[in-house]
Length: 441
Image (cartoon, rainbow, N blue to C red; front, side, top):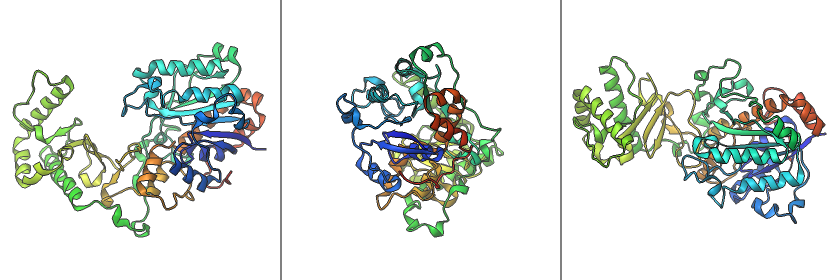
């Protein structure tokens, strides 16, 4: 007999993929975004209900069926560094955690499994983290004092890892009753933020998850247009010229602001200290390499016509020899270049990674693979922009599977006491998530 779970803030089903791979069956889901709900239903055979707040009042909580696991990737915007970081003071989204608590109190599932951005446990959200831990313990769930932070790039491929740096906070709580939840409150996280089984993350190669260009319908839609290729060509000339002058010594890691390549930094009394520091560094870099940089400027006189954010370079590619050998992102802060090993986190905004050797952006299928979804997963006929958004909002399947399994194995006797079928499924599951081979709900 399968254990059961509910999937809150379900998105397109990252938690569903992970928990069904362990052997679970989803009995209820909620998702407020209609487009995501349609993708969820298409792939998992279950149409999510809408706003969770409509189902957590006392008179309607009964609609949510009993379940062994409550999974929820509750909204991250109130805690994300890219937002205002209002936490629980965001009265629209920040308080949705308490709706989860209402369901936990009414249904008392054996396990609660939550995920959010790493900043949830950052210094500006310490009060938020303390509140979450306190509320879960008051409801009888044993959770560690410190957050469990993990990323899929720390897992080897045979354990479901993926070439994506996506550090997220995971909270796994086992129901043991309020007294034990507080008495055993100093428990350590079951998984540490470090590579698993001596895996070396530098061994990842983005190339290995890419589609064959000849098999991509309308591949030209993903190729960089001429103006964007010119941005890269210009900065690539800069990189190669500087590497030659520096005898292969990598470029510095601080942001290079071409508009600020001046012998004297333009620092005013009102200039913030962080910006003044970058201005001084850019000025010193220019003075050191003035001849090479001036020659580069002469070769690219129309560089000044590039958008302001494209006149900045964030070099994080160490000794990589060319910009076209890197993974690139066009960000508001500049063109960011990284080694072609693993990718930065997928985000729900238009910063889709560019694979330099192919001179194109990742396709939705490739982004789906990075998130660990099964190969049969489909977005149907929706716009790519919607698919990227949904993937950026999603949970890494491999990381979720690993965190769930390891956390419950570390507390298997307590899990068996409240849900023998869940404990049996966890013990029988393999270390590697066998995605794509499990039936729909």
